[in-house]
Image 1 (cartoon, rainbow, N blue to C red):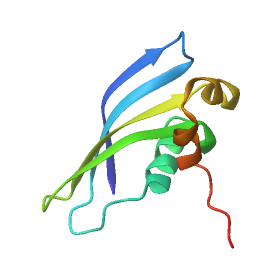
Image 2: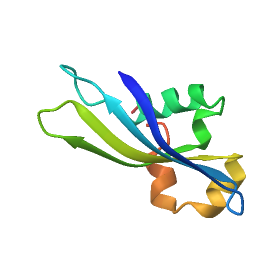
Image 3: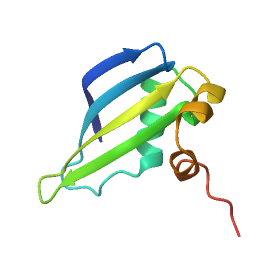
Image 4: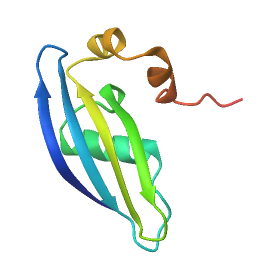
Length: 96
């Protein structure tokens, strides 16, 4: 899995960095949101809990996924700005 940042924008009023990215995963499955989240967190030296993957679109048969993400300065700022369903989408699933 190769991650490439296509566009990066600093949004200081909302305390976040907005990214457009492309992932090449030729002859492999589409990476999960948690895999992309941890890779972005490592690349930007941020906590994985402050990274939100807004959208991921995979092109059929090509092995390329493009998407958008947001990296917040802290967890409190993220909870104030993001909608509840987006935050819930990125929470770790509890084992039953």
